Image (cartoon, rainbow, N blue to C red):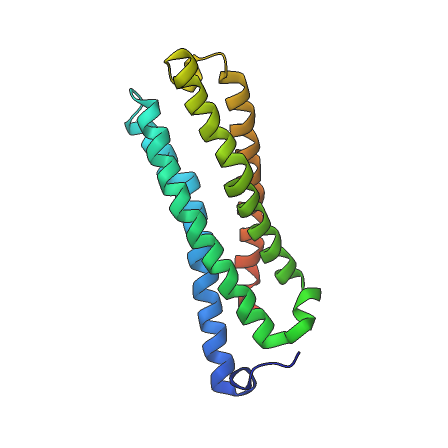
Amino acid sequence: MSALPLATSSRGRRWRTAVYAVVVALWVGSLWTVGYLVAPVLFSYLHADRSLAGNLAGAVFSVETKLGLACAALVLALRFARSGGRALREWQTVVVLAMAAITLVGYLAVTPLLVDLKAGALAAEGVEVMRSTLASRFAFWHGVSSVLYLIQSLLGAALVASLRSEP
């Protein structure tokens, strides 16, 4: 696969590099902001209603997930425009693919499980999940989600650190 014509001109390379940097910054910045600023602030301010805080955090994480997947698609398109098939051998492309995969695992597997546990606790016991017999399962899967998010955040840091020379 050959690079796009725009990618071969000096102006095209500068444009692609600038767009790439902005999209990576938007993606990783939103990841860090939501996970390490917005969610903790919600739980801090709404400490009396952890269920509401969790629901609001879940809504924000859902938006961040969609933004992240859109950014991943654009970053991959820019990397392939620059390098063609060689992009698959570049560590930054592997990082982007890993981050996107983690996002999808969270969105398609872990998040629905957490939602089901919350709904199950409410339906079966009439209480929020952390006051139910499902609390330990919820805590385990929430922990899995947190570890995946941390890994994704660290991969994002590596991607941001590589911006000086990319794409």
